[in-house]
Amino acid sequence: MFKTMRLSGRNFHGIIAIVFVMLSTSSTSAMTKFNVLNFGANPIGRTDSTDGFLKAWNAACSTADSTFIYVPKGRYLVGSLAFKGQCKSPQIIIRIDGTIVAPSDYGVLGKWENWVSFERVNGVSIIGQGAFDAKGPSLWACKASRSNSCPLGTTTLRFTNSNNITINRLTSLNSQMFHIAINGCQNVQIQGVKITAAGDSPNTDGIHVQLSTNVKIFNSSIKTGDDCISIGPGTKNLWIEQVTCGPGHGISIGSLAKDLEEDGVQNVTVKKTIFSDSQNGLRIKSWARPSSGFVQGVRFIDSVMRNVQNPIVIDQNYCPHNENCPGQVSGIKIKDIMYENIRGTSSTPIAIKFDCSPKNPCTEISLRNVNLTYLDKDTQSFCCNVMRKVFDLVRPNSCL
Image (tube, rainbow, N blue to C red; front, side):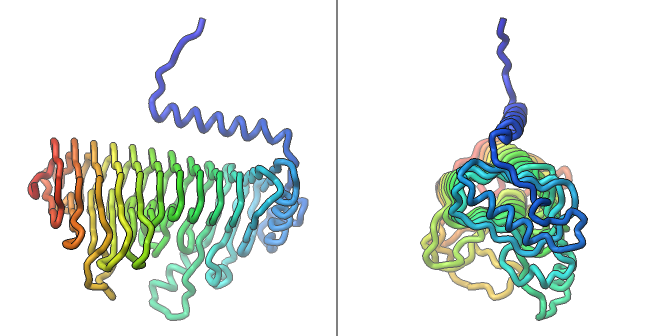
């Protein structure tokens, strides 16, 4: 006799994760395997393993079969790693159970744009219980001192112009700049990652997505000093679900209007998220300058705010620290944005702020079942240049 089960969203994604791991483990038996230790990588962390990792990648990439690269437990000191396609192998699984460690001198990596990068690859999966430790605090301290000698810093893990990518269960610690960046990619799934950096660490965005289509981010914990997830121009069909954020600057679309000619952002769903002690919750931000860009078809659903400074915000006069502000009018067109079942506490009196462009007012903004309080009191809302509003059961309601 067969019994049916009704699965909640959490159980469903948990089962998907278990099935993925089982399939990954069982399928490796038919793969050509490469262990980085066999290519000279040192698991003690005292000598440079960069060359060993690159040799393992080149061997896997040049193999016609599906391949499996294994990084056993240990600490591996590596410099900048650039893994290039086009590979003969149709599928490359990289299992990391060890910790990839950056050089203690931040200047070694700081001069590179990326620490670990993949370019023009297809069918690459990074799985395992391992971690990337970028040793960012020394560079953050340099920047805090306002020294002119500090390098910009490096992104820990970047995929560029790549397709069918999976990142599962990894940890990223103390990135110099962005932790994970997805740029110009299609069909990407990020699940079960843990990202950690200090709340005052500069420009340490957790996951940045731009110029990419069909990206999914599930069941992840992000604690950082900038946006937990930042969504740049050219992002289409992005799904974010069951992500916790804080400290950090929230989940942000933008900043946009950096360039006059800019691709739009469309079809974004952010669902079942929790924000704790973050600067922002759900944010759309653009500089006040001309741009051909747009934001449309965004759904913010089922979010919990815990002591968040700006739970809901659209800011088309974005200018951090009020330095070198363009002082113009944002050309970004914002349309069809929905907030539904957003609840919790704001750490400031104004819980909803819509500061839209006078030239391109925000249109088709809807809020349903929103309940935000401040010190157990009613909060306030601020609306500027918002047209065609739809509100239902919203607290605060002072700018209706």
